Length: 203
Image (cartoon, rainbow, N blue to C red; front, side, top):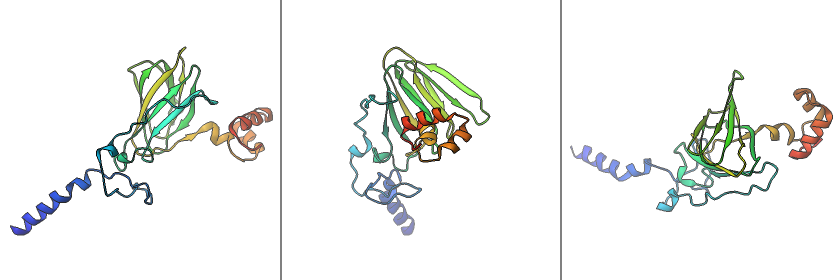
């Protein structure tokens, strides 16, 4: 009986540690995440920088992440978030998240969003305030401001770090020989040169 009480008391004394593991960003990262921070406060579970990002760029859009690096409290919990802000005509171009599914929540304006399934079916919808849309893990998808004013959405992910691969940057923002890009994309040399120039690749 004494042993049972001792084990139970040890469990109670340490059970809070299994509830969460706030990331110690100074420690090494592994597939399981960061090691746990030893001293934790309520501030570790609050993200206070979800303001609109800079939309003065090529895409007329911004992406403000609250992944584990920005929000250590999500470490090991399998969730994270981000904020999307769009000027008129702004776009988050075709991309995928290999590490998690995405749930988008509209809060302002109108966004046309869609994804392409593995059998090349297209699922497309124009979203308004209060609408939600899910983008399954690993599938190519995009979001375009289809309204006349600004648009804002919040997204959540089923991962603390879902990763992202932007299709345009993957194709044209690198030093892959342009002749190979032309053959693999069926684009003519002038188009490849233009796109490599736009995305910082070497022609």
